[in-house]
Image (cartoon, rainbow, N blue to C red; front, side):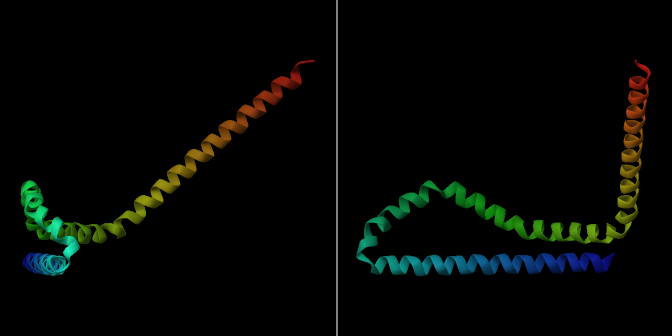
Length: 129
């Protein structure tokens, strides 16, 4: 049990580091883009609008930050559920076989009922002169 907890916290740490790296890369890319836009005279008008646009989207940015903070925990939880699911796969084979047998039995029963109905219909038609 302690090994599972250690594995979970290790995964969560790795997930946090990965998300932090991605955020850092995004910030660097945005900074580089802004720097290039400042050097381009065609982008000057759009750069003047940028602060207004950012202020309008402050709540979205905050919500995105909260989601990003929760993401490592979500990823590690999903990973743990996937591990548990993979451990259950061998137990599913008998269930799959049982369902296949049930389907086969139902199809046989339907087929026999259909044949019986046809035979009954043929018997009735031969009796009529």
